[in-house]
Image (cartoon, rainbow, N blue to C red):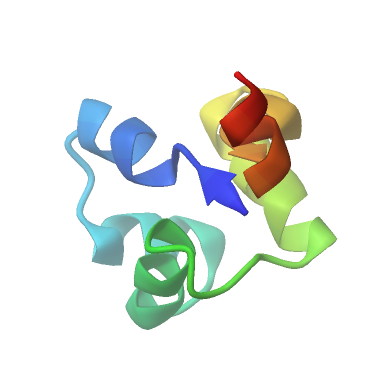
Length: 69
């Protein structure tokens, strides 16, 4: 799964630790999501989307969608 989490975080000048704290997850989890090594659970994806005031689809996309675009 592709995502824009690193870009969105950088636009706000948030560290991985700061984002992790706001989402109540570990910094390692943020890193794993950003690098595509871990796909967040649906509840976590909703929390991420709410934090950035965006739709889940605007942050996350399947690998297939990324190649079609």
